[in-house]
Image (cartoon, rainbow, N blue to C red; front, side, top):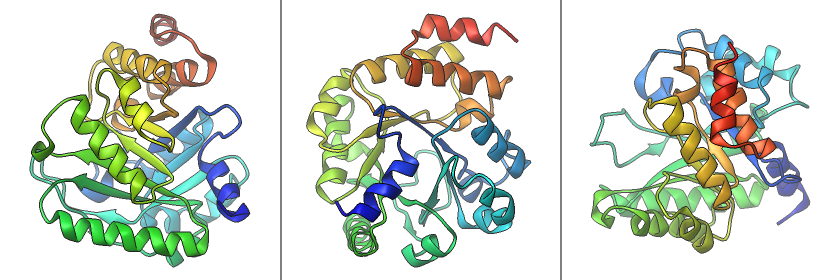
Length: 262
């Protein structure tokens, strides 16, 4: 890995501790103004204020808030989503390219993100787009977050997740985001690059905090959780509770107590 790429990677992941919090607020590009992100700047500020290592967002927000974000350039990293699709539950399985690596650099992003539905509809086209993206990113020294999600064609459970993460790593992603499955140690063991877990749709606080604890103990590099933070009744406390587990090694029980401190 070149020096430039390592520097950029260190801006989106905490390489010193090996544990990171990526805060995705890219949902508007898939679902529109869903609950919790109606005020774009408010949710961006939440991530900055509560200690996320990096924020994942679309180019429209990077453009709109470029002046404001420039003030925090030394404090937090930015990941530009370069793939997209209309979100339809249980149907979305292919994303096309919606932005370029060059634009990511012009906008000041430190890394790019692409979602690969492994084994899904139009998989050959998706793999081609992903491979081409990796090549361009390597030439510019830009890290790639591969959101590698297993589809039904792979089956269910940990074996499907293991296939998805290994495919993403073998194709050249520098970081893998995927769903949680047990035993998660097996997922980490087969993936030669850092793995972070997604939060997915809104779930109970207890459920999320417990899977975060399990994933981190299993060797996950951290989390990439959005809706279960910004849709929480106390988003700031939920972010702090997740941070307590990921960064401070606290238990889910201790993190739940933080939520009660409001």
